[in-house]
Image (cartoon, rainbow, N blue to C red; front, side):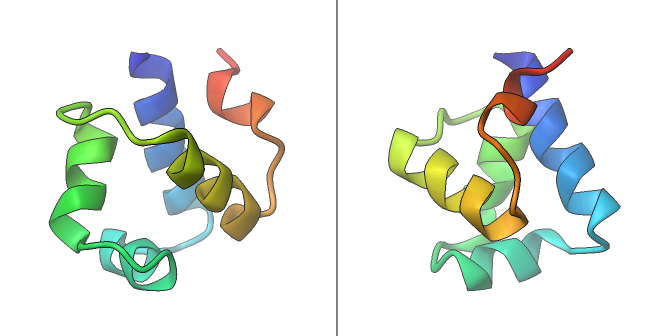
Amino acid sequence: LKIVYDNMRSIRKKNNLTQKDVAVNLNIDRTTYCHYENGNVMPSIEFVIDFCNYMKIDINNLFAV
């Protein structure tokens, strides 16, 4: 799952967003989002879907190598 976390970070940065930007827009704590990106906590499928919708990407992009 490391690729998912790395892709979350990469996609966020490509969109010039901070972790706080993403967290606020997805209505979660910034520290929770940080834990997702660092791989400390596995995000729920609901969060993954929300993240993809927010970033306007296909969910498969999170799993792309």
